[in-house]
Image (cartoon, rainbow, N blue to C red; front, side, top):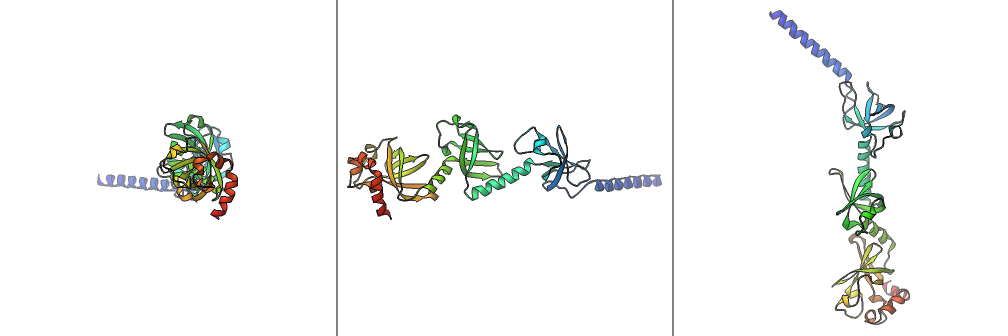
Length: 299
């Protein structure tokens, strides 16, 4: 009885050891989840592609993992005999086959590229894919980004932006939370700043009148005409001098790109204190000549 029991245990032990040895032989520990490997596409089927990555079994690339942008044409995404890098997303199954992804590898690379673009202050073009009350969604290199309403130039016709290409800069790139927030307004502002210089005469439309000054919209960017820079004569109420939507010419007297501030002056264009109040039309009509003279005082 005892000898039978011992023999049986010994047989079981020897079987499990053999089985373990075979399992070890079949499993290739070179291939781990998260690893990037090079491979060549050797076969297509309706569910994906088989890839030779140098293992005992060919690896499998499911069709939904073939690209960041969805496409039904697998032969275009991963042509036969094409060699490239893949990301292992699932380790070997019972048959020794690992599962690969191009989509997740492209996603990693895209986040790294976008983070670098944000750090270097670059702008890029995106296409608007959808709209809601808060802003618009956009396609950014196959990923979904968001532009808040407050960071759009045309905030009144959000639905009309669908399908349009917009130039944007980055507000937030958060890979861990998969959050990509962009700004059209800041990109326009950055571009405009590069074209502005102190002493330049600019033209814009009065967008708002505050007790401390008048904001002038210049094709999507805003400059401030401070109450003290309107005239050499004291002005008590700006609403009595300006109206919303009015076209104004003014000189750039200060630029602060880090704070997004453009300071303007019409005071510098006056021939005498109070001319902007008494004869604003004359000042505007001859603003170019006046600005040439005023530039000498700025230099």
